[in-house]
Image 1 (cartoon, helix red, strand yellow):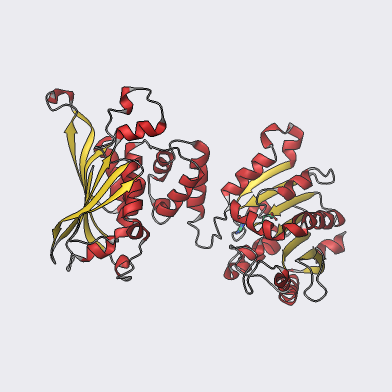
Image 2 (tube, rainbow, N blue to C red):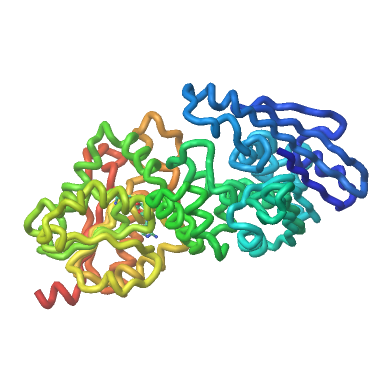
Length: 470
Ligand code: SAH
């Protein structure tokens, strides 16, 4: 399997810095499934070509799996055609170039260069039309030379193999990320099992360009080997990234990290109990859980008969999937099923679905927003959704000094954009209350430190006209 990359931007030998491979040497790399060799068939100021030869060892692959089931495991196109093996080789041999890093010439990766990539053999069942659909929207001029199915029988027509040349002016990291994702998509086969980390890889390498690609669904499906739940998750994360203020494509796993820090305090449970109590005290029956995450509060609310309708909202599709799972939505009786809803949405966009509830909870959510987006959330919650009661919790930054494992000045969670002291929180909440016509009261949550205060702070907002009406 041969892949070459050529540039003609003078001095063209800069390509060797970008790829972090010396031009005067032949270098080989041992990979799990064979051997990769990098060398430069051409180096001058005017033109430079790097070649990656990938030698996949199909016999060793079968041995590794331990059992040989068919001849096809020994005799196949893997050694010759570009496939997911080539993607892995690109990531391992040209890793820094793929990530857009260059130690010796840090400015180089940002420069778009006239590039020509050549793949000696590509397996593509979809024919040259699919090649065009995948590469042309990314700005490549593509030449695909079909190989006959059998040279002795031209009447059998073309097979699924092409020699492909792609030309464009691009950053090297862009071109490599396009190939990294699209080669396995063309081949529609992967040599390894795909799981959650494949979604991460797709978001990492495709995040910049895949959301706008007209074939993003096909690409995502094929990249994830047609696994529906992974495809849904990946598309959710990719399109969530599109909105400029989208927080976070928050990792469910990251949420757990904060909980680990706070676990000895049993703070998660205390917080939930405090929020449920505040909602009940306000007499709320129809409740929104805004930024519901994995849905623990939803479950507590569902278990309590005083709530008729409970709806969780989150920007993270993945979090909603976990929540649906945890709530056993599929197994609920129709009556119970009626009481619960899950909505995918961002709290920084006005959303008509949020109108008509008695109360909204925002538990440990606001600190995940970029400070510049907090005013948008204020309007969405307090001006448009405008429920009679809003219960909001957030960390008390002063308390962080008591966490031995948390370096000074750091937040409790990687994804927190800020954390407020008590004075800051109270000033913010008082301002919101005044601007939108609410009264606000504060309550500590968790065992308080004598000087630093409680670990969590809670504000309960009550709509002033609602109070009057009640
Ligand atoms: N309330 C839950 C989760 C807190 S983590 C709990 O207490 O366990 C913060 C949650 O807010 C994450 O699930 C994140 O996806 C969500 N989130 C962050 N920004 C958001 C936004 N703009 N719109 C909706 N949800 C958001």
